[in-house]
Length: 496
Image: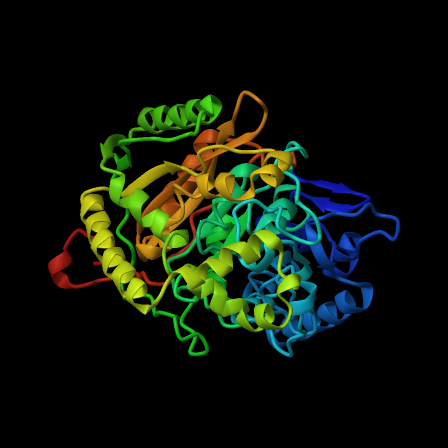
């Protein structure tokens, strides 16, 4: 097995490797998972806000035995049997405090968020809840009373946010996958900074019931994983229509069309890296690798994407963020991180007239974006234009944060799907990433190409140093129904 088991537990195992260990290596969740409990003398790890205790783990293992019994002892009916995962601490898990990185906001829910319930029903085991930019407001991972989350390759640099802890624990191989959220890029920027996969689904595919809102009309639950296969597997289990979520959408009938052997990919006609030559070189190398793999690359006008990206924080959608924290702001404004408080208080600059004008402009720009993507299989962008140190972000928290979202902020406003992928290492030893962006419900088509890209690059998994394991067949698309047609008119065909 291409994975490592240490005194701290299995490190860098994919979902398939966890399942294989249970199936073939004579181990059980009862013997493996306790090794993931935090040691009493363990150093502080800012990636976590809360971690599983021995009694809570024991209860989950009891529940897993009941699930297995209900499945007739067939582990194949539990596709995440005994697989450890983490969730961002703005997502509910029954009995675990939800804080959104604000202790004064904390509450303890009685039930799981829909996505957590579905994952646990498939056999997954919750190991902990992770740190974030408070109230999921930021792309940096430094706006938390629990401290900044360090990059998994160089602790002087940021992990990216707001799903900072969720990306960190996956990159270091502490769990097989994690959940984040993504409103402006929080499920993609940290993936790019930590050499892992970040799946930002089509809005409404993964329910946000039981998730602390940032911008309710734009929020997505995202997935971090070491491989595209794992991210797609988790999305297939956690996703689906949910009546509890008023923004949930049923996936349209029919599967996403497969890409041609020679995919046609768009890239921005104007690229901005804010003086980061290494980021520019890494993206150019990725584009050349795509061309070498047979893709046709063509530039498109990026101006509507850039204008729409700016609207998310320079428009009335900031008022949605204020709506999420209004009660706390009125009662205890000092409890809100000062940078986050400054952002949400910007809602006072907009009124209803501004909101309608911005929505009209959003619709106009979205139409232009969709038209520009016609004839292309996807848009390819740098996941982030640059990366900064923790010290740089603390000195200039708003301007530098805003720069990080130029290739991400527009995706949800324009109703697009996205998949952040590792692209290689920069000259300074930090990861670089690219993101594939497609139309709504093209998630599986992006994943099919993404797994080919990951196999082509062959990069180690996250920061674990573990090699990319051999890939099995791609996940079946539940929207695709295979039909066998037989009849006398099919003379010479296999089923005649």
